[in-house]
Length: 190
Image 1 (cartoon, helix red, strand yellow):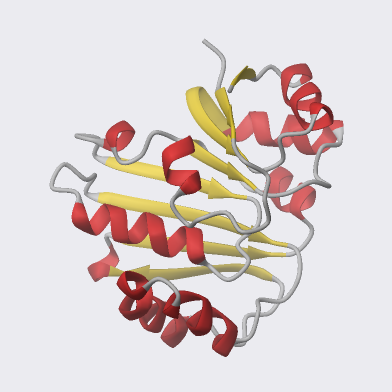
Image 2 (cartoon, rainbow, N blue to C red):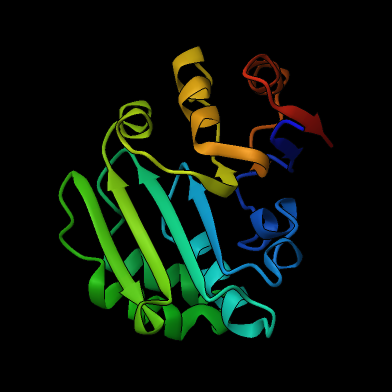
């Protein structure tokens, strides 16, 4: 079975839990020793915070949650992340913990640890296709951000990171995105 792709609503104001639901989380990670999520657009970190909050709340959570996030430009200012988290009160304390470690990050790969090292954030700042090709990751779930990443090199590098059965939640529901993913070997489910 090829990696599975679930299309999502492409509205710019996706709820932080939209990717969780698109990847069938937390049910998919139940009982697993570890779970790895790759996100192609870290933005303000809302999706990481939502995954962390879901992990914290789930008694069947994996021992280790490893969230790998790609960001092609410098991170939004700290105040923006905290302001965005304020809209989701349950994420506020987590956003402050993230903020304490996530400042002044230059291009490159950065590892941040939370919850005594049981929640890891590997934040990669730089050109996304290059970052995907340079790293050796195998992930269980993928959060694909908006349009613009659908070249064959990007999709091929993405497929290399996915194990059989990896769930992808896709914000871009255009036919071009679906065609590129299908051409890369992904099964599309809506």
